[in-house]
Amino acid sequence: MAGSGSSVQLLGYWGSPYALRVELALKLKGVQYEYIEEDLTNKSTLLLHYNPVYKKVPVLVHDGKPLAESLVIIDYIDEVWKQNPILPQDPYERATARFWAKFADEKCVPAMIGAFVKQGEEKEKAAKEARENLKTLEGSLVGNQLIGGEKIGFLEIAAAWMGIWARIAEEIADVNLIDSETMPLLNNWFDKYLENPIVKECIPPWDKLLE
Amino acid sequence: MEEVKLLGTWPSPYAFRVQWALALKGVKYEYIEEDLLNKSGLLLRYNPVHKKIPVLVHNGKPICESIVILEYIEETWPHNPLLPEDPYERAMARFWAKFSDDKSHSFAAFFLADGEGQEKAIQESVEVLKTIEEGGLGDKKFFGGNEIGLADLAFGWLPFGFGVMEELVGVKLLDADKFPRLHAWIDNFRNHPVIKETLSDPDKLLACFKSKREMYFVSKTA
Image (cartoon, rainbow over all chains, first blue to last red):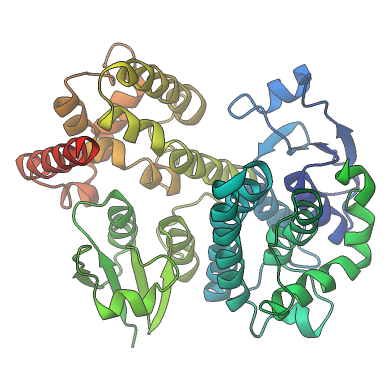
C-alpha cells in the first residue's frame, strides 16, 4: 500500500501523450513521484530493463516494480491511491469509459497520425477518417460531466490530449481535423480540458511541440 | 431478475473469451449466434460503433469489446474472480491481456502468409510466443496463477485454435520442446472442467479455418 515510505518513479518523454496521461493521473491524486526523462533515440538501460516487452514510455515504477502501458498504469494508480477517483464507481459507466478510451486509441489516433504524416490523396483519406471518428467520439460526450463541470476522469485523461495534438497537426500539416462547427461538443470538451489547472501544469509547451 | 444475453459468432475467439468468463462464474445467459454476412438489427442497435461481436447485453444495456466485457463481468459478478486481489498482479494480468490483442496480427500473418512473407511471419510469431512463455506465463500453471484468470482467457485462442492453424499452414511453431511451459498451459486450459465443455469439434474447426484461409488467398489473387 502507498504511504510516505513508498517510492514512485515515472519514466517518460516530454512529447509523449501517453506519458502525459500517467502524469495527469499521478498529479490528480497528489502522488509524489520522481520523473525521469528518457531520450527515445538512445534508450536507457533502465527503460530496457523495466519494459523489455515494448521498450517504450511511460513506465511507472512503484517500490521497484515496473508497469507499462499507460491505461493499465492508470487503472493501477486508481486502485492503489483511492483519493480523487479517476474511473467511475458503476461497472456499466466504467465499461463505457474503457470502451471510448479504446476507440480513441484505435480509431482516432492512427487516423490523426495518418493525416499528419501522409501526403496527397492518402492524407485526405486519413483526415476524413479522423474527422468521422472524432465525430463518433463526440457522440459519447453527451451528458459528460466535464462539459458542465470541472471534473477530469478516465476518458478525459485517456483522450482529451488529442485536442492539443490535432490542433498542432492542423497548423503544421494544413489539414482540418476538429471542426468547431460540426463538432462543437468535442471542441468544447478539449477547451475545458486545457483550462484545467493540473492539465496546464503537465502539457508540453505549444512552441516546443510545434518544432 | 437478471437478463444476460451474448451476441457472438462461432468460432470467434473473442466471443469465446466472454463465454468462458460467464461459464467460470456460473452466470446464466442467452446466446445469440450472429451471421456476420447478414448482421441483425439487434447487433447494429447494440454495437452501432463497431458492428462487431461479441456484445454482452445485461438488463438491456450493451457492452462491447471483449476485454472491456471481461472487466465488466468481473466487477458485476465478483465471485470466482478472474483477477487477483493485489493491484500489481491485476495490472500484470491486464498488461498481458493487452499484449495478446496487440500481437494478434502477427499470428494472423502467420496463418495467411505465403511465399517470402511466411518466413518473416514465422519468425515474428516465434518471438511473440517466447515473450508470452517467458514473460507472461513464467513458472505459473496459469497466467492467473493457480486458477484461470483474465490473461488466460485473453490467450485462450492459443489452446482454442492455434493447433488447427498450424496444421493448415503446415508449420508447427508451438513445439513441446521449444515451449514446454506454454504446451503444459494449453493442456491445463483445455482440460479445465468448465473450458472442456466448450471446446469445438476439431474437424468442424479445421473445415471452418480452411475455408477462411482459402477464401483469403482467392481474394488476394482476384
